[in-house]
Image (cartoon, rainbow, N blue to C red; front, side, top):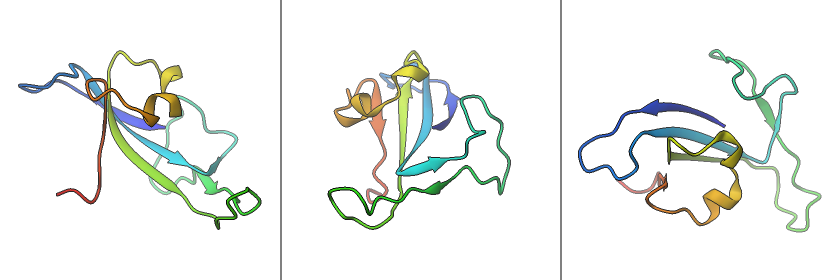
Length: 98
């Protein structure tokens, strides 16, 4: 997970918020952890091999961008939170929407 913080704008119901990126099906580099500084061109991980799973879907990567309320702790950033987001606490960005 990565992210940045931003203040509130007029009419924003989330208050202080963070924009985060979530990568799925990624085998993370063993030295990468919360708070690790990364630089341009650093390798963060490799696409995980999903071919042995029940679905048989070839290797692939999911990238999600979202804003979350600033009071959501890092430990709460998981698929339970993202799967059915409270629109007042989590805002998912759809890349296909202008």
